[in-house]
Image 1: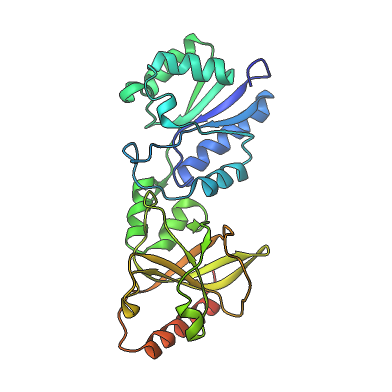
Image 2 (image 1 turned 180 degrees about the vertical axis):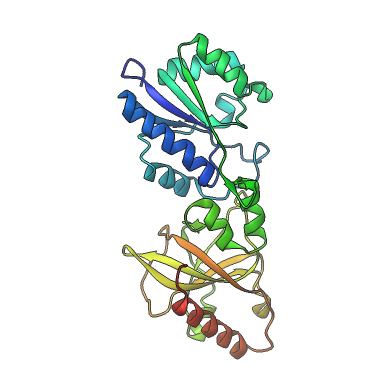
Length: 293
């Protein structure tokens, strides 16, 4: 972007791309159109140990999709290690002024930057003013008397409250993980499932059974998802298995989006496989009947 018309740049981690993030992104896109600039996001890919932030709410692919849907033209996401040692002064010069040719930057009022989070919004204003870059601090979005935040959303997901989490995210909580081969127990019992594995760096919602929606061939189809250890069949580890009524097809290896709509009941152990099969049937019926509020 160097040497072009300049850029309006949104700054932040944007985990979840929640309502507060969307306000920052919308203002960035709007300002870019007003100024005749390109719109851009500068964020980062956390280190593998996830020491910088909590476990991710979205996959990188889903996060990028949600940001692009806001109208952002350029999405820059370098590894955290590439710039974490920069001083605040070097960050403004090397990243904002040189890399982006920034004309304006946008962030929330809790934004920090530079090595060991040495810079805050006041320092950002001062350093950017010296570089001829305007700074706009976008107010946080409030919900039920408190700011919308990634930590609040994580707490909702861990409690199974996917509806409140979705309200704060601005759209339903969604995974888009590759479909893997399972043990085919569901097929044997008459309810074949798609199996997806949460990476250890992603936040795991409350274990249990959910009403979900699966995107196949451009259509969101009713589904029911079991997230847990499968105690009835002595499962090892946590699995994410989704039953899609009236669907058959080979989608192994595909990244299939699954939206979580409502928590039904916790993971439980049944005395027989017939009881397990009946539970899946009840969950599938709940999925067919569910309507978005």
